[in-house]
Length: 257
Image 1 (tube, rainbow, N blue to C red):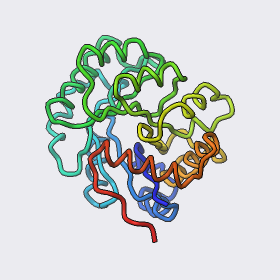
Image 2 (cartoon, one colour):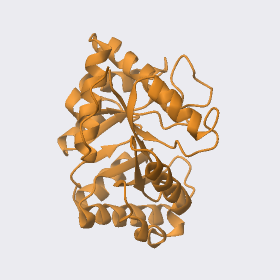
Image 3 (cartoon, rainbow, N blue to C red):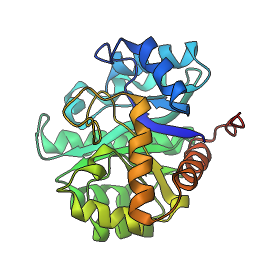
């Protein structure tokens, strides 16, 4: 079966064995596509570099809300680079408030506009900021192919995302025993609107919780969601791979041998 890790930071040297080993492990686990995500200029450049070297990796360019005070102008010139398939991760994070909220909202709005201007999907990070996230999105207009990455809401937030035409991406958090609202959302979201991700090196799923995450572990999230929905894991893998490739406008996956 084909698996697609729709959001990872595979360029990060914290990957077990380093990025090259993590890529090999992912392929051995059946991962046929990965999106390496930028959070500021250096990580956006790193995403582009790893995608340029590997045909099964694509890149995003973005400014994380933690880094909103750096200014969106620091990343704009990278958007036209080969292998860039989305803007983000962009959004709001009121849990840490590492950048002033006004700057976060301005940077988020600016990146929504960049997605519109360049005809690219948008990858959203939101934490403890649902109302403002929806307010900014509604004001700026939802880019075609918007993804709520590492979704941590419940059914109400999932419906709000779906009603706006967005896609919802589930990370290893869905496998945590305490994540009952999130698991309810994972039952609700249609497979043709669902993606799965690792957010590696963060948020390793069970049974690896607390360890350094890597793209290969997206298989555990796929299995958990399959069990949750009482379907075969191949169905979840195939559907989320197809959805990710459609959202990011990528070629179809190779046929498994």
